[in-house]
Length: 274
Image: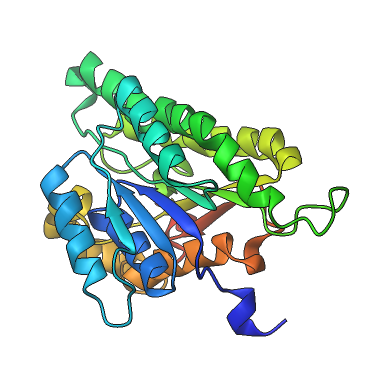
């Protein structure tokens, strides 16, 4: 198979949660630039619209390729509304990127109850909620790739969960609920791989290292040089790093990858602190 077909996501329908800013926007742009139609869900309605306007204005992008769907993804009723909206617009969803998330850093002795409730809900619970609600559309995407009713699914529906290297190691910063919620997400993704694989849907995780984003802005401002110096590749992530990883998992090149956790971090999670 030629490389253009192997890594193609052209005409695929994609939903990126938290897709208006940071890593989510990097992922949205990668899909848009490669011919996909991308729904962007974000709590910030203004940022959501602005991101879509910017993406639709990119050279070579078909008008209306990026569609804003402002949503508070921590809310059950909002997730239900989002899923109903997608179902009203599309018969298939080829790729669901569960990227929306939050962090909270505070010293151990003062770490609040509210942090656990907020982060476990948004970073973990609602990933399950939204995936569950959209499973019929993901299944439909996979079913369309069967050559006969008895043939295997060759181009499955994809769930791509955006995790963190802080779920692979103990982070330096006191982000207890964040690292725990992301570790839970990594294992949920593996559980979904076993549950959804027989239905023609894969589930994989990207364990992301430091990328330029609002979430990382304060940390990079204070510790940016140390973070770069500690990375085997001597830098932080670029948009193409996470975007390319998503394109791989969403294309035919990644069709047989299921239940994997791929570290997109330059190797920094491997470094000893001793």
